[in-house]
Length: 580
Ligand code: C2E
Ligand code: CA
Ligand code: CA
Image (cartoon, rainbow, N blue to C red):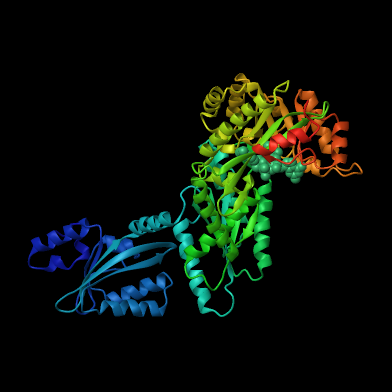
């Protein structure tokens, strides 16, 4: 008994029942908690070594029979605790009711969490156990952290962002004056394309890199969060003048204009930003984020890397657009779409070679709506398949009629605009061959106009699709040429027949010969690659003279004819001088 391990830490060996003492000593040494029993006169009755270890009592400080308050005092001095701490701790010892409490203790630089249970003894004094709950606390904290952060970028997530924003909104209502915060909704441009073409690993790395760049643009008091996918949000506090907010937006744009290096390759990216400035009408964080989202949507419409500040008109615009989309859904079935046709002229022979089909929407209430207003909506809302099919069909039908009515040699052609989504759609080739069969049109007289950006989005599949179309003997023209950024090395891989010089370049040609460098360049480029050239948007005689001078093969524009509805073609054909 004398030699049992815990014997010097309990009084029990003095007890009559040696067996009780032995059992208690074993219990004391066995449990993982620290335990101490203090008698009515504050004297220590028993303790275990876990208790000593938990609180790093120097060997021999805790002794059976010693006044526990003195032990505490020496210990508190040793770890540099205040008098107040000591008094509070001693007061807790006097509690006559049992209690449980969690507390944190820093000893020798390491901070640990303990759960203490206090059980008063009937004759005063108490039994206390101390459980080290540091690991549990840490995992709870980790859980909370995980619930509020995005695992990929480590940035705050939507939940945390909304919570912080709500605090800022609530606080702003307590202060007089205009609320002093701004929320950015940021959406990466073309992320899906990058992700699909370069792979998800690169996509993930890009998100992380962009998150870091964005974090560089704000102060420590601001919040940047990843909302999900390729969407980020920023909360700027104490923004002061609107100029500050705009500066941050500029900084973001500027930071992202330089390419990011991801796994050894340069990746170009940009973000579209919608900004909602703090306002008194905002009560909930969702309202602010929604407005920033609406503004972001406007910014997207302006082109990559733009930003917009929300104003209340935008709300009306969005509603308006939503109504338009709803109307557009039934437009094909209600036969509200129609095609206009614009002549294309061979500049060498002054003859009509064909038409470009340009879609119009005859809206029952709003009148004629132009394609730039509804084609992007159709793309965005999944209606382009249906509309695009109708256009192809209608244009081929129109072409057949025109070829029968005006049997020119060579046959008149029809240029048909293909939109982004339509071009990447799986069965474009199959659908077109069906339409050709059904309408009986010679495929060589059908021209599909596609843009550089459609091709560049996914070069390999685009080239494969182009080859399939060329095998069907359909012609391909690159529309709006000069506005995209396909590199020359790619251009020669494209199996296309012609480039259409974008009308903005033709438009800039002045009577005194300014601004002709780009056109000159495009024409010589086309020559070297054996492509035909069509100048679109020819409005003035001097522009025509210029492009003729530069040996541009074909022209299209208001100078020759405006786009016209089918029934108007006959009278135009009779009146003009370009037919054979
Ligand atoms: P685009 O392919 O560049 O079409 C030429 C546009 O220039 C047409 O505008 C035409 O009316 C206009 N235009 C023609 N000559 C002149 C001129 O001398 N001066 C000026 N300033 N403009 C001229 P529109 O019909 O409003 O079409 C705009 C765009 O909408 C088209 O640009 C094309 O990208 C798209 N689009 C038109 N029809 C269709 C279609 O059937 N399907 C698809 N996917 N897109 C279409
Ligand atoms: Ca076109
Ligand atoms: Ca064009």
